[in-house]
Image 1: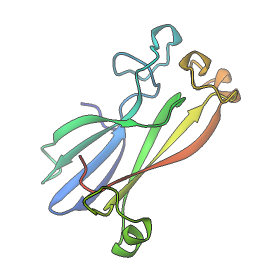
Image 2 (image 1 turned 60 degrees about the vertical axis):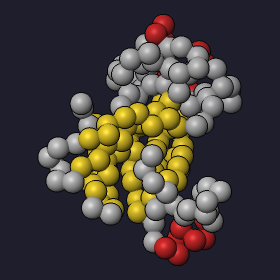
Image 3 (image 1 turned 180 degrees about the vertical axis):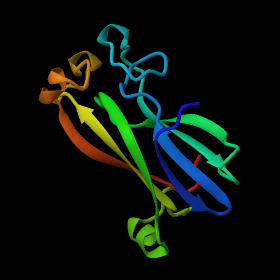
Image 4 (image 1 turned 135 degrees about the vertical axis):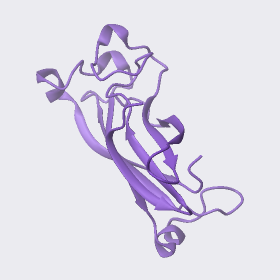
Length: 145
């Protein structure tokens, strides 16, 4: 597994790692080159997650879906642990009252047109990317699942 753009936080005896898995949403396989001919609608934007007790052996490596329709690219996830006060100010994340323990911030781009169609995404990070909108997006987790 390639851990590109890694970010690590330690919580409850585990090192939690988030990383870039692919730059482009809609690709059927993990890749760093955006080939618009390979994009498929319905395949989500995502980043990677893994955890370790010792920073040497990693387990539970898996993609994490970014629930943002129209996301063309996702890269450079950063993980931040929340203080109790920060978590409480955001309120419970689930019906059982669990509070967030961490926030992941990713960089995303979306089509400048506001479209949610992957066919409107730029095909690379070169000149064609200039018309897209770049922005941060945040996700919260209470259990890293």
